[in-house]
Amino acid sequence: GLRFVHDGQQLGRTRRVSMHVNRRLQESEDVKDPTMRKRYLALIMSLQGSALRDGGWEQCVVNGAEGDSDSVIAHCCWSPLEGGGVFTEVVFVVVNYSPKPSQASISLTEGGDCGKALSGLLHGRGFSLKDRLSKYSVTTDGELLLGERPGGLQLQLQPWEARIFDLTEQ
Image (cartoon, rainbow, N blue to C red; front, top):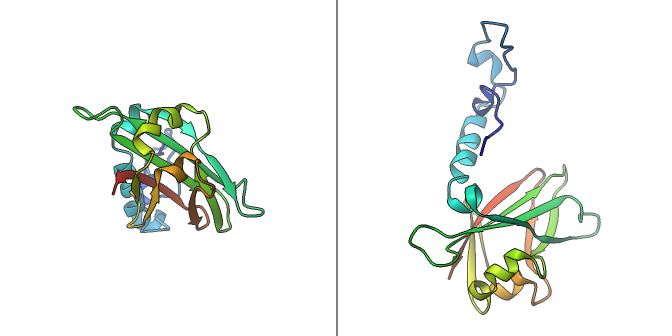
């Protein structure tokens, strides 16, 4: 799909150029955060894969610590890969859209399409979730992700932090 990024945003430029003006500031005068280029490159590269582009999406159940229940959102995406099994790519996208650190417990929606589609894949197995945006990883089991056992996947997120997890069997 279309990615909404204004010209120069991925470089860290802060000013948008009017289409009526035929000039812009030099990059050295406009870029306020030189690390932005690296972060946008990591984000754009992490959006590769069939699950995020063509797969099914479903919002996950998120239970936050006291006062944190509204600051974290999570979605599960799943899709078959060419030549793979029924569902060979599973991705969890988790975002803390708050200026404060947040804790959250995440599980698939009971009776939802994602849980139904993935229950055979997840049930009775251990998994690793590896973040595409960093080197962070966490291990869990299918029953926690399916919500069959209390607790769900426990995550702590910094302010405005996003994670895009690939699910792989251990």
